[in-house]
Length: 524
Image (cartoon, rainbow, N blue to C red; front, side, top):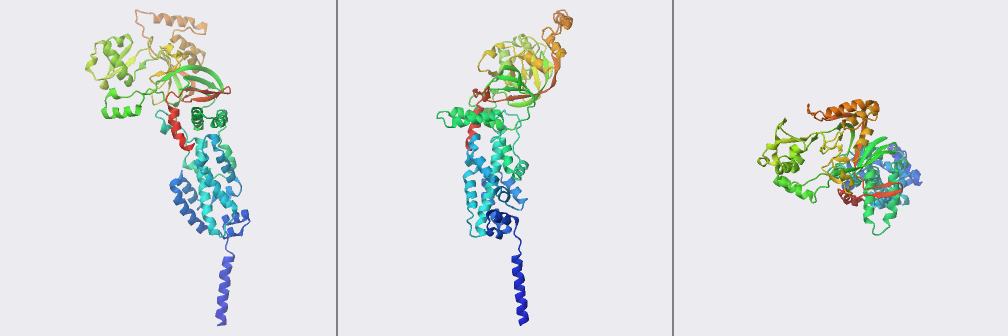
C-alpha cells in the first residue's frame, strides 16, 4: 500500500513539474516584459487564437480588405504582430499620431478608426486586467483595428481615395492602385515609423495645397475653394505613369499645352479642346438606347484624359471624317448643298472605292443612321486639321492638330472641338518634335515655308514650281516625319495648381471636380 501511495505521489509531482516548466509563448514573454506583469506569462496561444477568430469574423463585414488582412494573419498562425512589434516599440503611437493629423490631407481621422484605435490602446496601456482571459478580447480588437487603420491610411494617402477610371467616363490613364500583395507587404513592414514617413506626399504642389487647406478650413463661405483644393490634392495622390525628364502636357481646363524638359518650359501655347457633353447626358443616352433614333443620341465631344507618346507628324494631312461627324454634320450639309463636298475638298467612298461624282448623290434617299459612305477631306487649304497632325497611339482616334480656324484661340472658353486638340503654334511644336534641323527644313518646305538653311533654297524653289504646275495637275499629298524620340504626352484635367507662389484656378469645364467631390465626401 505504501508503495502505491509513493508511486501516486511521484506521479503528482511529475505532472506539476510539467506545468512548472510549460514554456511561455513569445507573445506572453514580450508583454510580460513590456508591462513588468507576470499575468502575461499565462498567455495561451490556442485560447487567444480562438478569441481572435471570433472577433475577426464578427468585424469582417466592416473591414476594407477582409480577405487580405485575414490571409496575413492565417499565414502567421494569428500571431498578434502589431502588439508584439509595433505596440511595444512605440510605432503604434506613431500610426495614431499620423492618423490624428490626417485632416492635413483633407481626410477625417474617424474614417481610419482613430477613436477606437486610441481607446483600445489606452485600455491595453492601463495594464489593469485581472486575468489573462480578460486581455484576449482587447489584444484581438487592437490587432484587427491597427491592421485596418494602417491599410486604409496607406491606401488613401499613398494612392488616393478614388479610382478615376471607375468614376470618369473618359479617363483612360491607368493609375496604380493598392493590391493584396502590396498590402501584405505593408502589414509586414518591420519599421512602421519610417514607412509612414516615406508614404507622405512631398511634391511642392502638394505641400503648398496642404498649407492653403489649413487656412481655408477655418474660413466661412470658402466652400467652393475648399472643394477645388481637396479635389486637386486627390489628383496629386494618384499614381500616374512616370513623366520622365521631358514630356508634353495638355491641361484641358486651362486650354493650354506645355512642353517640359528638366523642370524648364520649352514651349507653352493655347489649345482648343472638345465641347462639354450635353446636359442630362445620361438620361438622354438611356432614351437613345431604347429608341435607337439618332435624333435622340446626345452629343459627347469631351477630350479624354489619357497618356501616350508622340511618335510622328503628318504634314498636309488627310482628314478621315469620323462616322459620328458624318451622320450629324456632313449628311445635313450635303443635303442642303449638293456641291458642299466638292467645294470643301471632301471625297466620298463606298465600299472602299472613290465615288466619281458625289455631287449627284441623292442624299434624301439614304438614312443617315445607315450611310453606306465614308468621307475624307483632302490635304490643303480648308482642311479642318490645318497643315499638321501630331500622332500618338490611343483608342479614341484623338490627335493634336493645326486648324484653319485661327480665331478660336482668341476665345476664353476654348472647349469647342469634336474631341481632338487644336494647337495654337503647330510649327513651333513640330520644330521641337523633329529629329534635326535638316528634317525641320524639309517639313517647312512641305508647307510652303522657305528653309532656314539658305543652301537649300534651290530645292525649295523647285518644289514651289512643281506645285504651280497646272499642266500636270499637281495634287498635294501628306508627308510623314518621325519624331526625334517618343515624347510622353499627358492630356490631363487639373483645375488648380501653384505657379510662382500663387494659386491658379480654372473653371471645371467638364464637371469632373463635382463628380469627384461627391465621392470624396465619405472620406472628409
